[in-house]
Image 1 (cartoon, rainbow, N blue to C red):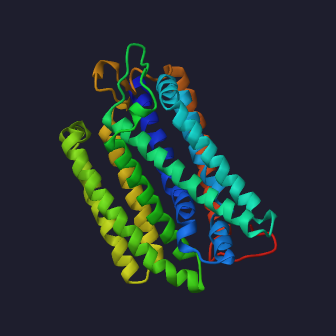
Image 2 (cartoon, one colour):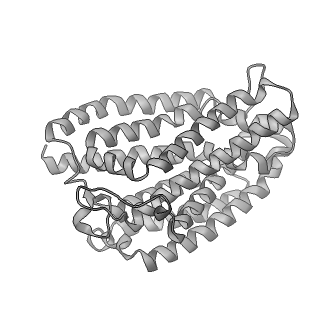
Image 3 (cartoon, helix red, strand yellow):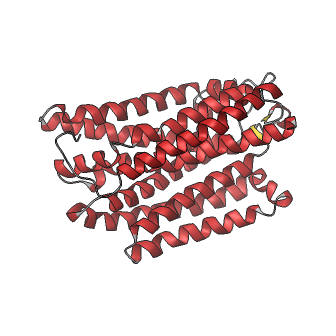
Length: 341
């Protein structure tokens, strides 16, 4: 297999792991975002936490695999991304840790203040992680001004612009919609009925942010559509994205939340594919294109990529099998038991 083929293979493989993470951890981050908004009682808050209790740590495996694959296949890009977004990634790390601690510690005491504090922490940590992920995506799309040696010398505030914050809010709206649909699938009774309204509200917020972000991207980030000329098949992804979005309210109206959730998954997958199409062949785009990191100038050696490909062919099916088994075992409506959070 040629060097170029291996480089392209790893670009799409890393993209696959990113899509998996966005879909799977997207709904449990969304559950965290909606945790305080949709619940009224302690039992309902326990239900929302237990809806993701058996799943959230497995979902984050996809993020770990994504980071490991990026490090092995494109070490230059890994170094630049983790140095450029060092402080934001530290904030994300603390947010993800705090979410896990909130899940584990909330039920350790019957105190209302204790539980309320962890509820607030769980929700705010979920929103913070999602917002930062979105801001990072916005910066990659807009371009990170790199200098010689692929080094970013700006500060944290330089990464915050109206556009990147707009993409961050879109990410929060997307995951909130994803999480509310998931909760409607997993719950029963009064909470289940209340979530119908929240599905409509979060979908409305998502649609507004999606349209606004799309318009701003087309106007202010013209290079995001440059690959559509060379790869017209990408218009098919746009059509599928629109159809998936349109099917969400249709499925909600028909009281088919499972189909709405599938459409929400398809929407996130399509957005991730369009993001990959917008930056290809770049991994970290720089306005001064001579300093952009691409899959060609940032990759490991041919031998490394070849060995990693063998590992991927062995490891990826194991991750997929594990994911399928866990979701099958914990299918159905969430119930509270003696070992529940």
